[in-house]
Amino acid sequence: MKKNKSKSLKGIVVALKANFLIVEIDYKDCKDESFDKLDEKFRLLCTRRSKLDYLGFFIDVGDIVCIESIDYKNKRAVISEVEPRKSFLKRPAVANVTLASICISVDEPLFDIEQASRFLLTAECANIRPLVILTKIDLITKNDLILYIDKLKSWGYDCIPVSIHNSQGINSLLERFRKTKLTVLAGPSGVGKTSLINHLIPAVSLPTSSVSKKLKRGTHTTRHVELFAIGNGSLLADTPGFNRPEIVCEPLDFAYLFPEFRTQLSQSQCKFRNCLHRDEPGCVINKDLERYPFYRENLEEMINPHLPYQAG
Ligand SMILES: Nc1nc2c(ncn2[C@@H]2O[C@H](COP(=O)(O)OP(=O)(O)OP(=O)(O)O)[C@@H](O)[C@H]2O)c(=O)[nH]1
Ligand SMILES: [Mg+2]
Ligand SMILES: [Zn+2]
Image (tube, rainbow, N blue to C red; front, side, top):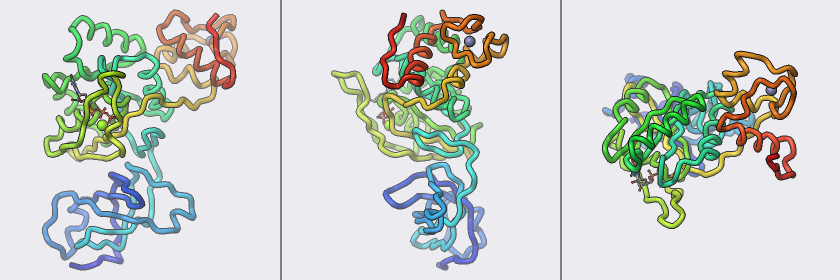
């Protein structure tokens, strides 16, 4: 076994563990090295060159990095460079995301407009078009499911309804993920993100736990972001659930994060260029849309963070 000090390789950060980073590289990229047979992909425990800290480079899961001083025997290496990111989802923090799959359960925990919207807005803010995965559909009737699908449609989103109990939707999900370079599963705690990964990737068996009977909420089982191979060179990220993502955005840009408002703003223009779509004359936004009160309340909070908004 040799230490390869001269050659650097590219890999992807698949997890952060304390002060270390786990980087996955392709066996084919280092075929010429004199080491024993390894899996097609393998993972190395890495530290980072201190110059990266001086230069202020943060490294997150999903980052593409150059590694050197590779010790194949002990599966260790050092990160020397980080490639510029194509996208970045702030919370959960994942770089180079190509699809943000927002998992929302129809029950246990119950579908919540504000919470679902906050997750969707986080993806929209990062300029990553989200896909909604409606989970635990075995817990509701077909008619109720249709109501949820229609609701999401009226917000401008298609969804994939799934259940791990009767495997509904699982194949279309798998197909979609295998066509996507890096998909993140994000959403509130307890909606079944990890259960979905266990179901989709049989080799993976991650801990999950039932939602609290009293609060009907998840118990924050997953603690770290981790990427898993899902076939076809695609990766799927499990992430810790949280309950209330913050929305950080300029008030004038806020309406553009809602597809149903975007559609109206692309068809006609408000009278004033700086319209915030409140009570301005000549505003084209339809105030009867389901998420308008949510937009309005959060807009007022952005403008006056210290004053509670009171609907008129
Ligand atoms: N009925 C039903 N229960 C499900 C389904 N998927 C997951 N669950 C249950 O939901 C509970 C929570 O699942 P987890 O996979 O731990 O949820 P999570 O989203 O990863 O939660 P955090 O890690 O806390 O963010 C478990 O008891 C699962 O068995 C489903 O399709 N139907
Ligand atoms: Mg989990
Ligand atoms: Zn307007």
